[in-house]
Length: 150
Image 1 (cartoon, rainbow, N blue to C red):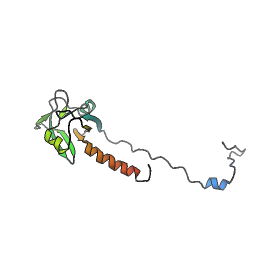
Image 2: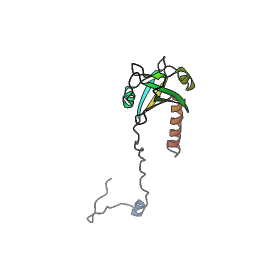
Image 3: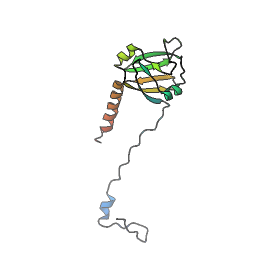
Image 4: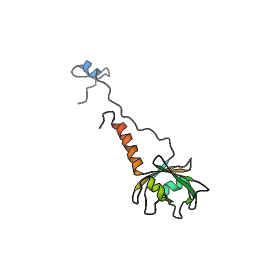
């Protein structure tokens, strides 16, 4: 029901008008934080040779076939940086091939999906294996639901 308009321009409220004035304001929705990063994301499936690729990620990084790379593991993540002395290279197809030892350290096997996070400013690619993603998602969800929302 829409309240009637009274000549003075105010609203006519039926019933106890003091009760209507004591109602708390409606809650405001929390907006998601704005993005302040230039990170480019991709999702790739690890093939049987340990290769991953995402065209948008490689374009954002400006990496071309033959670029020498350094690949290491740190805190469960795989860090890939251009390195003129690196023993690894971007393949002629534009893939990054992860060495077997790094895949073993991170528990990766063929068919696993990894999140690729390219930081064009730093010229770095960070691969997030499923175990890393599980930990991040669990933490974010715990924080989201901590306020009793479900």
